[in-house]
Amino acid sequence: MAERKNFEMTQADHDKIVEACKSVPMIALQCGCPPSQQENANNAWSKLGLRMGFKSMTVQPDPYGPLRFTAEAVEKHAGEFHWSCSLDIDCPNCEDSFDLLGTDDYGDLLGDTQVCEAKKGIETFCPKCEFEFTFDIGGGM
Ligand SMILES: [Zn+2]
Image (cartoon, rainbow, N blue to C red; front, side, top):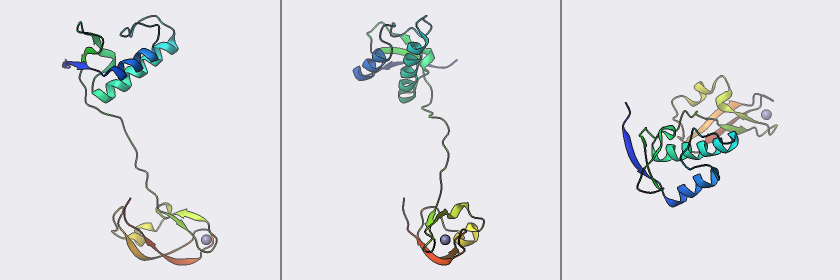
């Protein structure tokens, strides 16, 4: 059984939820209001839940005023994110750009160079026009 905790939102958060769910009682997730409005309200609650760390579907009003409520606490887990790595190189010959990390031999070229590490004088060739050239990698993000 998950732990139930007291939460208190800010007036601004409260306004957002009221805005999202105008004519609907503030905490009434199972009410029979139109789906779009219900969705808006649920969205507003789930965003707030993510930020404050509670399960939005477990929210219950607290007698001490509209900003207070209780809910089951959860980790502030924002889901799964994916790496996006590329090293875009402009070919000096044909001016086409290619992603070095998308080529087969980037492992040989970069060796044990770490992500964001600077490196000078790497030899490569353009996969499009086969022009051979060297380039440097600047460090940092
Ligand atoms: Zn080229």
